[in-house]
Structure formats: C-alpha cells, structure tokens
Length: 125
Image (cartoon, rainbow, N blue to C red; front, side):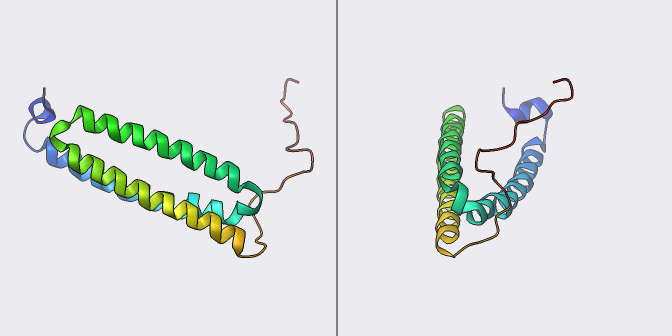
C-alpha cells in the first residue's frame, strides 16, 4: 500500500519536507564534525579514521542500493543523490586526512599514553 493511501492527502509532501529538513541537518553535522576530526587527529589516527570512513561508505552504498530496489519508481534520483553525497563526503574526508598530515603539527583533540588507554575502572571491580 502506498504511503499516500495510508495517511491521505498531503502525507507525501509532509514526508518530503521532513526528509529535506533532516538531510540538511545531517549534512551540516557531518561536515562540521567528522572531516574536521580527521584533519585535527590525522597524525595519530588517520588509518583508523579512514578505515571507518570506508566502512561507512560501504554501509551507505548498501542502504542506497536497498532503497533503489524497494522504490524502483524513484531509482534514478535515489542512486544519483546517494552517489553524489558519497562522492562529496569521501572527498571531504580525504581532504581532511591530507590537510591534517601535511599541515604541520596540530594540537589534537585526544591524548594517548604509550601503553594505550588506561584501563577502565568500574565501581564494582
């Protein structure tokens, strides 16, 4: 059953409005936090950060492909939007990594100890 049939007139426009608002928030949050973190901490964590960028890219591609299969009537815009955002986001991360590794020492946002993180102490242990 189509979404429009479930909720009546106007449901499609409301959902489109919320999706549009949500994607703006997601893209701004992603651009302000994660690529910046890669740049700031590249000297100590670039390989790990980029590993998770690759995992996230694969996950995103899986979800976009699933959406394209589920909604064949909108397959082209689903794939186009997913591919464009994946390309932009990946470029942001690669730029952050290169900028962080080539820009000289930066004060990172994390501290590390030679033996790794200190063991966590739980209240009951």
